Length: 69
Image 1 (cartoon, rainbow, N blue to C red):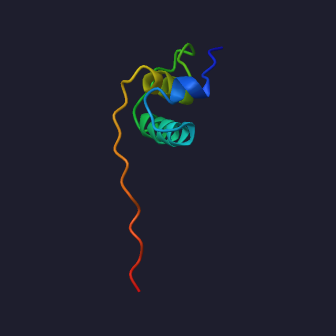
Image 2 (cartoon, one colour; image 1 turned 120 degrees about the horizontal axis):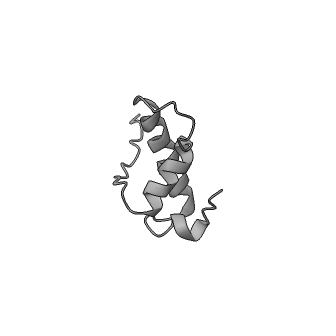
């Protein structure tokens, strides 16, 4: 089992919390694609963490718009 430390995640993100959010969203995106059901495939969260820590995931932080009253 591969272990990802917060330092691994923060190499390519601003902080560990942002890294976890990006990883979760990327895993959900990967879930939409067909997968190999041979049984030797990695879990989607592990795969997305690997791609994030390797620098293969590009992301853009979009600020939340506040409702105008």
